[in-house]
Image 1: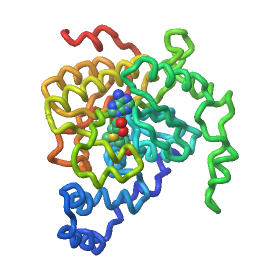
Image 2: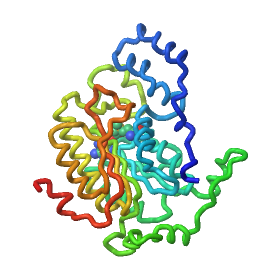
Image 3: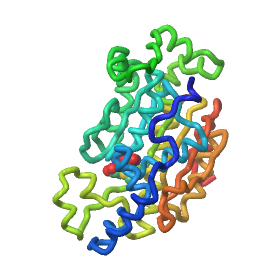
Image 4: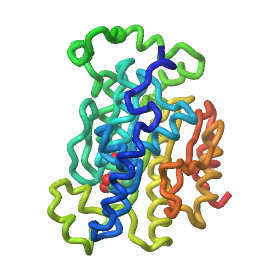
Length: 314
Ligand SMILES: C[S@@+](CC[C@H](N)C(=O)[O-])C[C@H]1O[C@@H](n2cnc3c(N)ncnc32)[C@H](O)[C@@H]1O
C-alpha cells in the first residue's frame, strides 16, 4: 500500500511544449529578470499548474523519489515551511496512514490544509520547546477519520484509522523502537526532520513585489553575499541537527538545505556520526547557478555518540 500511493503531482511533469513556448513568448514584455526567469522556468510553471505553493516542491519530490523518505503515517517537522510547498508534498505522502506535518517559520503564513503551523524563530529555544510540546501529544495534528472520509473521492478507499493500541504496537515493534519508552527517548517521536530554512532578507528593490500581501513574497532567500549565505545556512543546519538529535526516532531521516562553502565538510562529518548514510544532493529543480544544495541523512543510528556529532573540532 505504502509503495503504491502517489500524490497527483508525483507523476512526470505534465507540461506540454505548447504551454512552455507560450510562456517563453512573454519574455519580451517582462521588465525584471526575476519575472522572466519565473515565466520560462518549467518548475515554476508546473507548480502553478498543480496548485503547489512554490517550485521548491519539486526539490523535495525529487529527493524523495530518490531516497523514499516520506511514508504514510509518519510524523514530519518542516522547518522554514513558508510558503508551504514542502509541507504540501509531505502531508500528501504521510496522511494516508494518519501521519502529521508540523511546519515552523519565522514569518506569519497560513499553513496548507492539514498542516499545523507554528510561527517563531527556530534558532530560539523557546520556539523549539513549543514544537516539542505539540509533538509530545501523540494525537496532536493528526487528521481524524471523519475528516479523511469527507475528503475521499468516490471509489477511493481510505485507510482505516489505526487504533491507539495499533499505533503503540507499531512504534515499538522492533528492538530499536523499544528505546522510545525510556525517559531519555521521550521526545523522539519524529520520523523525518526537513529543513529548507534560509535567512529571510528584505527586498530592497523591485517595488512591484511590495503589493503582494503574503509576507513570504516580500522576502528573498539569499542576501546576494555568498559568505553570508553560507555562514547563515550553516547556523540553521546546526540548529536543525541539534533538534533532530533530541527528537528524531532511531531509523528516522534528515533533509537539510545549505549553501555550499568552507564549513559544509565539517557539518557533513557531524551528520556521518549520526546517520547510517549521508548524501549531498543537488536536485534537478535546484537552479544550477545557486550554491544551494541538500544533505540527506538516512536512518538515524541506534547508538549515537553525542560528542562525535557536536564536537566540531574532532
Ligand atoms: C526557501 S523558504 C522555504 C520554502 C519552503 N520549503 C516551501 O517549499 O515552500 C525558507 C524559509 O525559511 C524561513 N526561515 C529562515 N530562518 C528561519 C528561522 N530562524 N526560523 C524559522 N524559519 C526560518 C524563512 O522565513 C523562509 O520562509
